[in-house]
Image: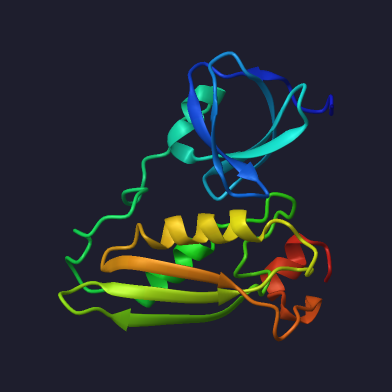
Length: 188
């Protein structure tokens, strides 16, 4: 267990997302955790005595003793998000808040997003389909990152459904990283 970060005891029960499976799991009040990364409004924590990694959403930051950021939009899917025009840039901005729990660069600047399509739906609203990849085929983070991206896309007004698929063709390479991402990784 790293001694660089202090152990935090959860002040209340929370639902966390297990890494890399992407499955939701209840972490009970009193669970000792260590925050290993705080990016994009989420926290990656390691649960003491189990070495399990979990993603804690911004809405549960108070259980970690952190300030809860005011959400830009609802964190859940809603069929009522059809008001106002859909702005593609808003989707890209939400994707820029998604991070691999082990890399401090968002998935857009890492070059992991291969395509983004907006498909108007009968009865209103839009389906957003995203094709993304990971930095390595053996990376087990796919379900967790894709789930985070889908959840955040669903917060954008005008989006009623989102599908995020992990693909492997073409293979990812470091050449896909944006100049901003390379700077954060010390590659320039």
